[in-house]
Length: 85
Ligand SMILES: [Zn+2]
Image (cartoon, rainbow, N blue to C red; front, side, top):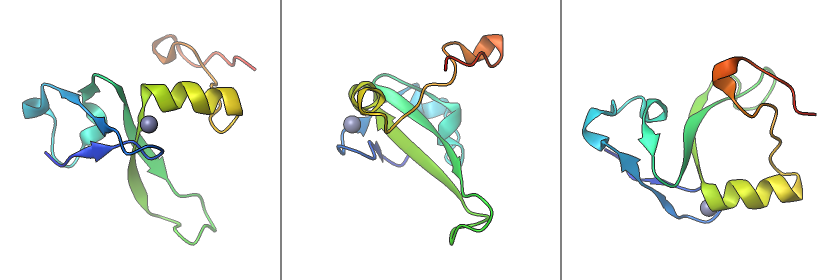
């Protein structure tokens, strides 16, 4: 499995049970110290139609929430979207 690093600080994001995470779907796995997900470029972006994998460590999530670079919109997505702001 390809190593995943935090987009902000380069910390390696450590998978849990890496052996069961599909190589082409790293966002489907579980990680000890961060989050890995998809990022879709919006229409009209110079990257329109591209899909990316983005990783961010838990520490940077906390910091970026405080600075407003990251916005929390839901505190339990398993319950459906509940807007927090
Ligand atoms: Zn980080």
